[in-house]
Figure 1 (cartoon, rainbow, N blue to C red):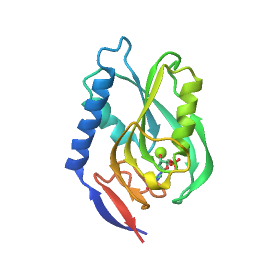
Figure 2: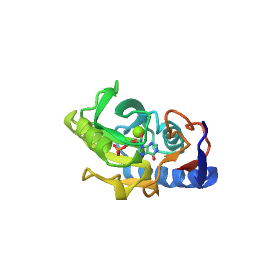
Figure 3: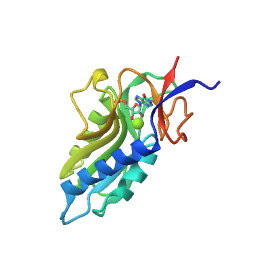
Figure 4: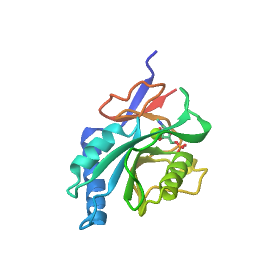
Length: 175
Ligand code: IMP
Ligand code: MG
């Protein structure tokens, strides 16, 4: 079955916001002795991540993590667990967590503590989408591109039951 999807943010709007996020990161890490380590939280942030690191002028290194918490539905299935760890040494590094959505905040709380406990020098989070009204954990992204309300969004990496990640725009599922 194909759900109805209401387009929210198109290609150009996304590209503009990605450039702003990259500029913000460039300002933050300009002149750093060691390149920051940008972490792609698989799979949802993959396209945002690739566009973002390529729009930055400051050199970065990249790595990947996976966090499990969602099944095939729209609700979180409890405590997030990091199921794929980064291969880079984290101790002493400036870490940029690149998220797709900060919703309840439970995933970001878990990933932030992972990097802090692993000895990161600093940890910031850039997210494509922020859903402030749904927060359960006391965390927030340091930079967000868009905000959404209590709606389920798909496209540009975001999925519903693994569908719609390949859409070039971000849209809301209509029910
Ligand atoms: P949180 O732990 O509740 O903040 O959820 C974070 C993760 O849930 C995100 O990284 C997404 O993978 C997923 N998620 C939350 N809301 C949405 C949505 O509207 N569309 C697709 N994925 C979502
Ligand atoms: Mg995610």
